[in-house]
Image 1 (cartoon, rainbow, N blue to C red):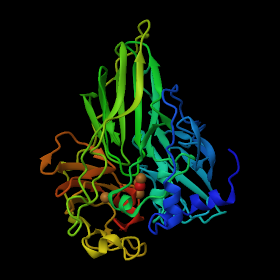
Image 2: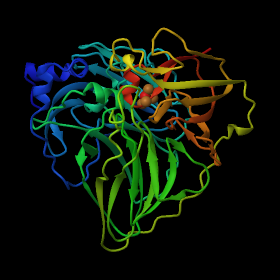
Image 3: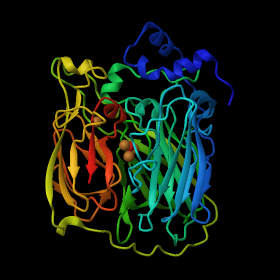
Image 4: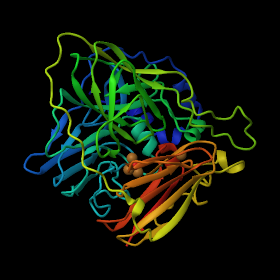
Length: 490
Ligand code: C2O
Ligand code: CU
Ligand code: CU
């Protein structure tokens, strides 16, 4: 990476403010020519850091700088100089130590999304603030019975989460099976979106983008634009797909290939299920098996209508979500050559827990809402526009107090005209119904979609940990605007 000029560094660091108060400088900056990504490069994988003898210790340096993105030089924020940051390969029972070094000029912190680890102290504590120039030592103990699968890490500083994730701060975490299945390949595919201007800089988000949730023009796989992957026919690959987009839902398809779903966020039990499409809300991950057939296929994200941010007084032209638009080609898969060496069939996976028969100690309703009229355009200041149960996020107010060990049923209701992906830290959620439709198989997620004008019902076992953490909308612009609450398990 080349060093940044002071001016460029200021522009990057100032993203948070620039988007709300769109000054004349911001407008001029955004009005330059377009970034011209290099298409069709060979797919690369993020650097992999794996645990040895039950331990992984690393430094994670968050810094703004110039480096490759979509095949060209861009000025973004990065972990350890790359987008995505390193993939952390772990096993149940491991210790993970991370020194987060903040070279940014704004505060940041680190969240291990989906990991079922303690929310306290130096573990997955979203209330930690790491100021510019500071280093914070995180220490996580992954329990022996932690589910295997794909998780991820990203910053979680309230008010800056969307800017920092969108700007390039994210990486995958894999909790591997002690006895992994036979595969031709096991890949991590981190999907993110970003808009870059002709100079390779990130234009600040507009007030409207902060309301609807920003979606970038470029949809990248491992930081590349429409990369190409080759495989032999009959290969069995596992794709661990992370939706690291700030707001974009990914309705994924891969025509011409056989897809089986091992889980979204957390493993499904039994045999892998044949699927045609997988919908990944922001923050979610898919664990897919691909059995290849000769030919060329395109991994595509189909348009997904996540509603509008229309509110009274804005008229029907107000704030579409953006994802209703065009099909995005994300990656090419070229399958050719001699048949791949055969690999043993996957054995059925152990049954997963089912809370449908559990005794529920408390039922709660949480209501997600987007304010209307006057309050709307004042978001970020008054903070009344994006609420849960009528309130915007306040870090030192506890919104839900839960007894340790309780099984609860939460009905998450959405009164707005947009979908909101609801996320709870630390404790996974079993989905019972989405918009009245029952989910038959026990299905566990850490992000559940709550459709516009609908409800999603989940059950949660508040076991293993006590302490304070958060739940929020994983459209990170909405989170930054206050659609987040505090839960304390005591
Ligand atoms: Cu991936 Cu609280 O977030
Ligand atoms: Cu999370
Ligand atoms: Cu939302």
